[in-house]
Image 1 (cartoon, helix red, strand yellow):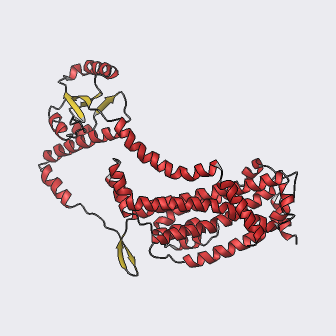
Image 2: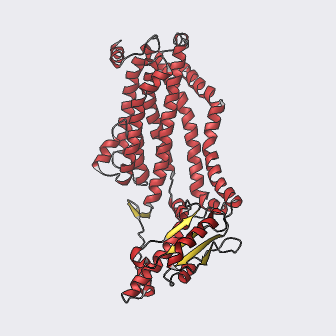
Image 3: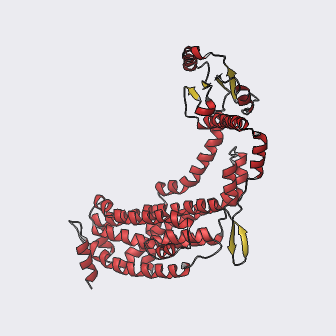
Length: 434
């Protein structure tokens, strides 16, 4: 790491860090979070739900009253969420009545209507008609209420008390409390929370590797096409130039990754109270946030595997940049690298559920998959270090050094080749040059 390499690192980092694109890209992640949750709060204030009116045609004559009782929800202004108005319609005049209701719906006099057939116990179907049927929450409320009523009727028909049965069923509900066994004892840990955290972190690493790997490739192509490289390598070795570019651009990704990690830590520690104040009061979401354990060890491993993964793949992106003469050719040749990163991401989903299987172990030791797959195993197993974690670090470092040595041979020849795109056969010949 001499002064020339440091100069290249500084140039690659500072020239891009000062651009509007990098600043916007760095701020866009927290901005997206602010827009998402701020938007939920803002729009919930601007678009306050109004009471909705529905006509109910109960051909059984028994369901309407209980149906109304099961939908007691009110809005903040105290009005009922659903105004259910019973309509007494004979079977032979039902078609005429529905034609009239349809006109009322189209003229916004009512929001919709429901027709409960006389044979609902057997058919288990209710006609729901409205101008818009996109509110699945509302339809779920109606469906649950009607389903419970029909279930009660069926139980009564066979001589069983619905209240007693539901009481016993409620008493029989079992909550599975997951606890992870560690060397220091057992700790309570949510499998859903671990998977959500791992999914999010690996997705960020995936984006960083692909985005900044492509940035490195374009940088090499640009300097090569403008004949700047010839001047640069007159005072610096090709491998020093390549490593300076890799480490300089890697610093950009590292800055954004650290910022995102800090935001996630803040969400884990302060997110629950913040979301409640903003009106995002979803029990399932709050429970997941409450159980997320983003430890400093996981954060350190995320940084470590990102660095190794970026240097490994960016070396290949640099080789692609040296072999082509335009960005269009580079886009085509980088696709195998993109697929390799995506494959490791797809493997992550299975490994996250079964991190200690032999297949998970051996897959995580393959250099192309190690950054994402091994980090996944570490994240879901924390605070336990999964088998092969230390070995994977050494194998990844060894593979990266070997790859840089090979790519440097391609890079030193490719950056001075103009006119045509080099084939893989020619690249192999460049590796053999001394």
